[in-house]
Image (cartoon, rainbow, N blue to C red):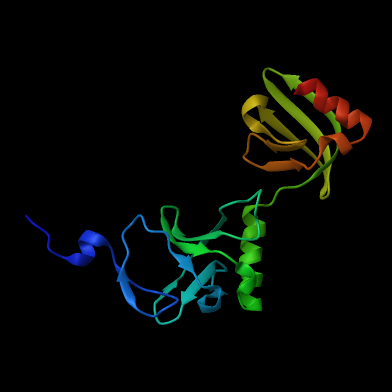
Length: 189
């Protein structure tokens, strides 16, 4: 059976944020969103919600940084779900103050990464390394399996550590840690 529907073959007609004209958008086209035409709010259950006036309201929006290390304040992906991108917000600073506040709250939740300030000990047992550290949020103990897979070094000396529960920790520059902490890093890397 042949399908002659333009919408089903090529995607949904989308109204251009810049010109106001409708055009066809296929599933592979990236859409860049104009911050001045986006309104973020909170749903009754507290999730982030996105309204693009005269077009659509997404009751739940997933917000991700496209370049979380090299350019965390720009190029923000907005998605309706894990697989459906709404578009890319290039410059979030152009949002209205309330929308920017909600966007930043969501990014802070997603990218919460405590900074490690001191390492008291790292103990290895049966291939699992137990770390006891001080972060800016207090003392914490966590376990890491497979150091090669779960410690990422970003040159020159930044480390991102992911524990067995998926929590991430950051050491912005291990060379600036005290000598005991530095020795623990050197012993286990």
